[in-house]
Amino acid sequence: MFTPQPIGFVNTPYKSTKEIPKGLGVKHDADGVLKVLPEFEPGLADIEGFSHLFVIWEFDRSPREELRGADLLASPPSDNRSHGVFATRSPRRPNPIGLTVVELLRRQGIELHVRGVDMLDGTPILDIKPYLSSIPSEKLRRGWLAEVEA
Image 1 (cartoon, rainbow, N blue to C red):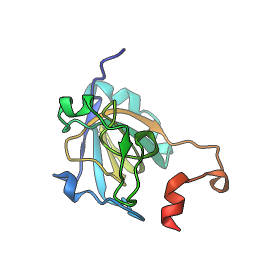
Image 2 (cartoon, one colour; image 1 turned 90 degrees about the horizontal axis):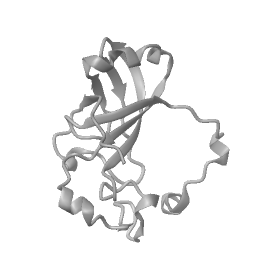
Image 3 (cartoon, rainbow, N blue to C red; image 1 turned 180 degrees about the vertical axis):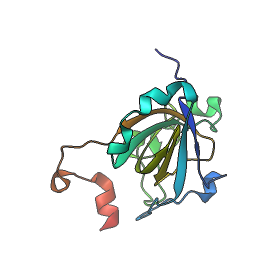
Image 4 (spheres, rainbow, N blue to C red; image 1 turned 45 degrees about the vertical axis):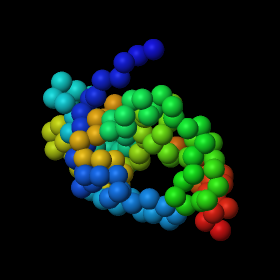
C-alpha cells in the first residue's frame, strides 16, 4: 500500500460541488490551472507536445468515515437506476480517487492552463499523464449511459 502525496493543486471556478455541472450530456468546458509544486517542475518537461492530459486527483472534501462505508451501488443524476460504483463517476468510492481528461492550453512554468476541469478549487493533484488512446472511437462502448442518452 502506498500513501499518495499531492504533486500540486488545481485552481478552478468551483467552490462547492453544487456548482460542478452534472448529468446527461454535460459539457465540462471550464478553464482551470494545474499548479504543480516546484520540486516536481522537472517532470513537466515536454508536456507541451500533448493536447490532452489525464489528471488523477483526490476527493479530499469527503469525510473519511463516509468513504469507508462507500456504497458499491450508485444512482447517477442522469439515470434513476442504480449501477455498480465502478460503472459510474460517483465520488463515493472505496478509494477517494478522481480521474479527469483535460485539454492542455499552455504551460507557464509550474502552471498548466487547461480546459475541462470538473473538480473543486484547491483539489490535490496526485498525478498527470498524457492522454493516449489507440482505441478508435467506433470501438468504444458507453454501457448503460448509451441507453440513457438514446
